Length: 187
Image (cartoon, rainbow, N blue to C red; front, top):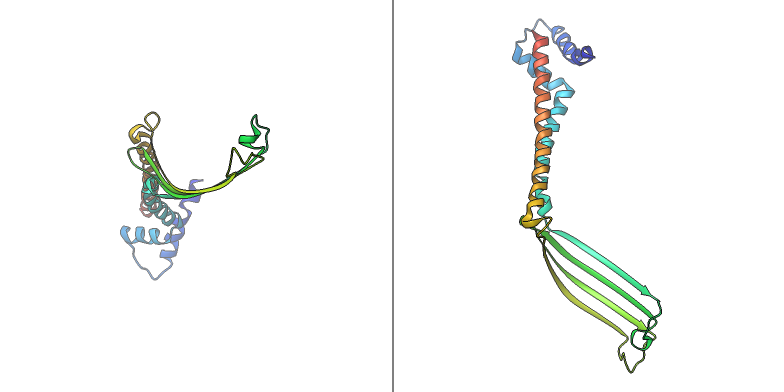
C-alpha cells in the first residue's frame, strides 16, 4: 500500500529526470511535487475550506426570516351552540424576522393576519360571527434554564469553530507529511 503512495513522487522524479540533464535541488523538487501532486493540492484546498467553515458559528446569530400559515376547521359539538357555534374556521398568516443574541435572548417581530368564522351561533349573543384582525407581534424570550444567559449558544459556536479548525490542522499535518515523504524520496 505504501508503494501506491510513493508512486506520484516516483513518477515526478522520472519525468524530471527525462528532461535535458536538469539538476533539481530539494526546494525545486518539492515545488514540482506541490504543483503536480493532486493529493497535496486537495489537502491545501480542504484546509482553506475548513478555515472558512470555522466562521459559520456566527450564522447562529444571524437574523432569520420566517413565514407561518395555520388553518383550523373545528366541527365538534359544543355545550353552548348559541355562544360557540357548531363549526369554527380560522386561518392565520404570519411573516416576520427573528434573531438570537449571544446572551440567549431570542426576539421576533412579525405581522399577523387572522380570520375567524363561527357558524351556528345566535345573532343575539354573537353579533359578529365572522371577523378578521391584523396586528404586529413582538416576542422576546429569555431562557434561564437550558440556555441561561447564552451558555448553550456560545458553546455551540465554539464547538463548530473547534471542529473546523481541527479539520484544518489535520489537513495541514497531512500536507506536511506528504512533503516530508517527497523529500525523503528525493534523498
